[in-house]
Length: 108
Length: 244
View 1 (cartoon, one colour):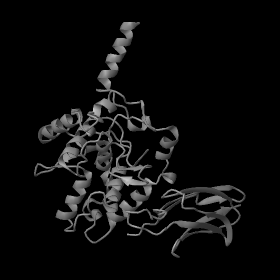
View 2 (tube, chains in turn blue, green):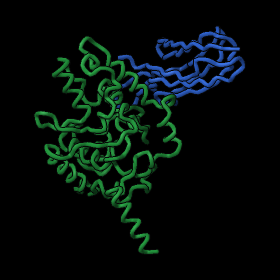
View 3 (cartoon, chains in turn green, red):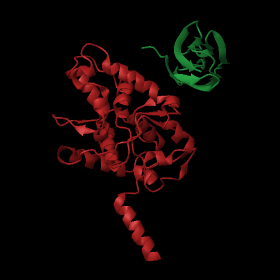
């Protein structure tokens, strides 16, 4: 079973110029590394970057540290410009990349 | 005036047998808002996965029960006594269904898959009033649960009611003591950073009074779960809840 799941909440349509709220919650353990004596060592494995592009242009980027909670929730806004696809991309330690996308229809 | 107050207290006593209040009343306004908002409630990640599991495989849950929406109200009637006389909570009911109807191995208590399915089914009863049957075959289990609830336990020598009846609403360390009903479980507990079952929470209670932590799905916790569900009769289901 994969330990990455994403829930993206945003409107499907917006009027041009509207502020579009986007809420993203992901399921990820954000393992910050176990090194203490007597415990089974575990390498750090967190989502360290989160990037969102909209119609080919980057609209949101975030660096996440080992201090961020498991299953982090991120909310941000963007401005509706044209009908297009938002690509969500999460980069994980070890090189794994998780991707999701959502469509936004923009009316005049 | 005094008499009027006494009469009022008496009425309240009748309406709410033991002063039990819904679990959500004890949450901070922020947590309550988060519990009500699926877009920022991590518990919904498990609900999503549970609904996918509901449809997965050839002999899926869906192939017998239909859409998971048909499970509305089911969780509000658990734990329940099965045909063979065993008391089953929702988790164990799913496990049994899996073994007997689907011919598949059990998921295991507290496994992600079982938590997900339980959350998906319990969520369908959100907002509905708890109403477990406690007569007939369930009566002896209820009595056992009531006894467990009332028994002083552990090195701190506390019974459940000494916190959850006598001190409900007051603070204990960083949190507010609730009425101790399990209507929000499986719940996303911030302390755990994950979704967990009521029995996992009960183990934390046992640890808190420095009593023996009983096995998940064990007879004592099951009987207690039935008593708690009975205590919560009429209260709205909140699963998946958010808890400190």
